[in-house]
Length: 194
Image 1 (spheres, rainbow, N blue to C red):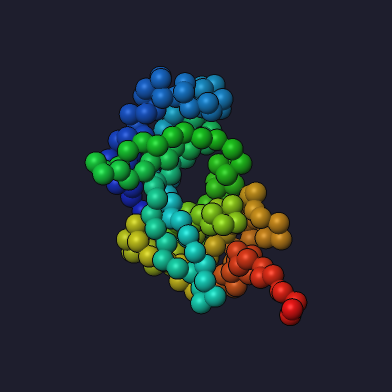
Image 2 (tube, rainbow, N blue to C red; image 1 turned 30 degrees about the horizontal axis):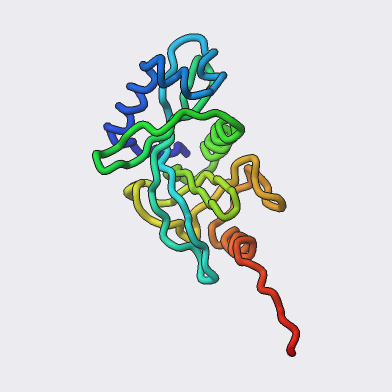
């Protein structure tokens, strides 16, 4: 089934296109793969980036949208990504970057394309674990800027994943959240009675 990639806000896309056309922005990005790219660079596959700031014993708290991420393609491969952020004046370009999450995101998206159910792809960051996942939301018509992971949504941890969590293995939210909850809960120190 095809993925239903939500459209990015037009100002977010415009800000990335403007940054790509700016030699200064590209040069200052410190992304060798983007600097050395041959041919035109195009932003593709806009994904809303949500942050899961807290995981409680009851499950996931509401996520908050922090930006839109575009894969920057040159030729047949993504060489970098561009991220936008919401400012008081609207959507603005934030930065270019590269690294392992670029290829891992592409791999997870290809993997999701082979699934039998349709999904709306999003990115979900769990800062407490330094973890990024491809969030496959089951409601393809939902507003991509809002919501929280439903129990039947899928999370695909991107590489590098935290120790003990397999990258590129889809998990239902209901199955993965208890493991994440255990990981981010601080260990309580037991005091011996005086």
